[in-house]
Every structure is written in structure tokens, then in C-alpha cells.
Length: 410
Image (cartoon, rainbow, N blue to C red; front, side, top):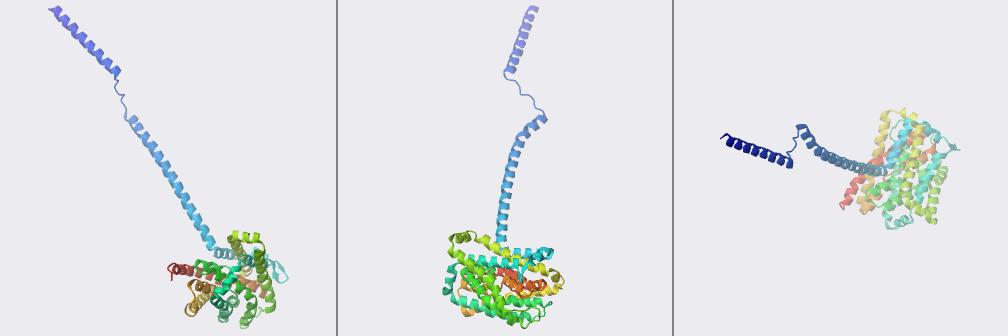
């Protein structure tokens, strides 16, 4: 019996050992997964997340960089266009600021003279009208026949009607009286050299007609300004200012007519010059404006000390008067052109704008020939410069309104 039990026990042990060996063999063939602790799990889970986050972050950074570059490109393009559109206003303002902040260089440059002619100012004027002649096309003169009514009225308004406002300016009790003299002189001079044409183009007016009025009135003004100025100033109170028409005509011929003719002949006779002017039209225009600003800088530098001694109310009165002067010209010429002449829209815009503009650079040039005193020159030039700035500000707003009407076909 015991032997039987022993045999059964041996069989059970053998079966158990065999079963254990079978389990060990299965474990060797199919090992159990290694346990992963929480830290390892968090690390392994965070690794793909970090990688994707880095990729997304890199993509966002690249996108932001491109966006910033696009915004900067857009801003720089806008700033460039703004500077080009407002170059005269910006350059005049900078010239005035430099003259007020540090007048010594401007006074030194203005003091360089040969006889009674200030060398640098004369050179600035020569270059302005030389460029004007270089950019003048013969086709602009042929426009006279097509738009003769507008041209005729423009000539009369600029050279005969608006100068009469000089008597009204002298009647205003400005202090010092040089302010009144400067505004009266501003009424007598021809239309602007470049501002009026630019405003006409911005208003979608006839640019060729505007340019024709610019050239014609500035050339004819060589003869009309000296005699009209003597007539107007004969009622003024500034006794130290004397007008010698004959001498003034000669000086204007040398500084206005001669360089204009030289520029025009150079353009027509030499093809390389014509190609050069066509290619660099915008830089030449900017250079011309810089010469005008240089005149403003020299003139205001000489009058800086005297200007700062003037009451604020007196300067404010000049600003208001010069602005109202331009508004009156616009209203008068606008009514005549619209209800009497009934010109087409583009021609009407050109005639109204050009007939309501006056040239501060020409006025400053004339002032430099009236008195040797830099102080008096500066005081008389201030109303002219302020008047030019008022024309630019008001004209810019008017151009936007006229452009809107042109787009609507009104």
C-alpha cells in the first residue's frame, strides 16, 4: 500500500515538476512586459509632446517673422510715398525748425555776397529755374491753343486780379509793419513753381494746363511784378523798402529767365539731357524743392532773433490772414470758372488751383533785392512762407475732395 502511495506521490511530483518546467519555458518564449514607473511614463509621454510643441513653436515664429517683415515693408512703402507726396511741406518745416533752433550756419551762408547779390541764394534760384526749364516740354505750349479760355483767365487772375489783394493786406495793422509788406508782396508774385502742378495732378485736373500757367506767369512776372509791387507798396508804411523796377527786372531776368531758357535749350538740343531728365524726373524735382528750402533756411535764420521778439498774437494773426487770403482766392476763382467760364472739370480744376496759388520762393527772391537788411528780409519772408504752407495744407484737403468728385464723374 505504501509503495502504491509512493508511486502516486512520485507521479504527482513529476507532473508538478513538468508543469513548472513548461511554465518557465513559456515565460522564456513570451517574457512579461517590464513594469514602467510613473516618472518613466511621464517622461515618455512628454517627449512626443515636446517635439510637436517645438515644431509648432518654430512654425509660429517663422510665421510671425514673415508677418513682421510684411508689416515693415508695408510701412516703409507708405512712409516713402508720404515723404514724396509731402516733400515740400516737410523740407520747408525742417528748414524753419533748423533756422529757429540754430541760426548761425544759415546767417553765415546768407552773408556770402558779391555786391548786393547773395551768392548762395542766387545759386539756389538759378538751379530751381534751370530744372524748371529742363522739365518743360514743347507740347505744353501747344496746349495754349486748345485751352485758350482757361489760359487767358489764368494769366489775368494771377498777374492782374489777385495782386490787387495786396492793397487790402497793407490795410491790416500788423506789427511789425514788415508783415503787411510781406503779405502784400506775396499777393503780387506769380503762381507756385511746383506745388500747384502737384496739387492739380492729385485733384485729377489738367496737369499740362497747370504747368503752362506756371511757366507763363513766372516768365511774364519778370516784367509785371516790379511795377505792380511799386504801385502796391507806395501805400505802405515801410519806408526803408524801395522798389527800382528797372533793376529788379534785370535781376529777375538773370535768376528766372536765363536759367529757364538754358534748361529748355539743353533739353531740346541734346538728347542725352532729355533722356537724363526723363529718367530722373522725380529726383530733379526733389532737388529743386531742396533749393527752395535752402532759401527759406537762410532767410529765416537772418530773422530768427527779431521773430522771437514778436508777440505770439502778431504771428498768429499772420497765419490766419495768409490762410484766409488763399481761401478768398479759391472762392473767387471757383465762382468765376464755374458760373462764368463754365470750363470742363479737368481744366476748371487746373485754372482754379493755379490762379489761387502764390510762390513763396519768388517772393523771397524779390525780398532779397528790396533791402540789404537780413532782419527786414526775414520779417517780410515769414508771411510768404506761412502763406505757402497754408496753400499746401488747404490744397491737400481740397485735392482729396476734388479727386472724389472726379471719381464720381461730377
